[in-house]
Image (cartoon, rainbow, N blue to C red; front, side, top):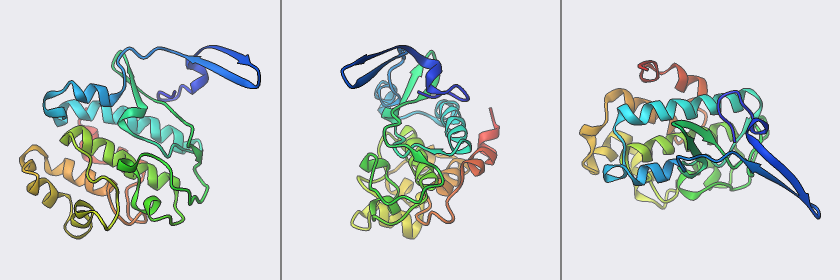
Length: 211
């Protein structure tokens, strides 16, 4: 697990070997995962004022990863654990060097970037940013944007052609999102990874400065 600048070894409570397998016993996170937290919220979603403090923690963790040449490639609500209100990213089984050019289709379908879905060569850091955008989107709406980021899906096509504001209006939740939040999500959920926000762009966004 990772939390800010504490790498996983800091959280290891015990390790032992059985035959050819090493086992690591990690700290117990008493808050469960972020998806479980969302299930307890009204209508399975959080208002911006509650979602942002959690999201800022996650973004700072991803910033640390990318700065240390690690891309996670499986960011999701299920892979963010909570311990006394502190978010901790877990499950690094699909992680890779951040400077690798990847092509393997990995991660959970709801969170996979369109270039990953398409089987193109991709920058895993840019793919992480898309996944971060979906994490925040689900926190605020209670639903994934689309089952998979493919032209076969209506919501994905609406996003690509008309933007997030139209999706929010179609879903009847346009009044729940501030303009600044829509702008942040739009930057992270750019179909073209070349114009998608970086983690530094997210950190520098005005809405991230409110806390």
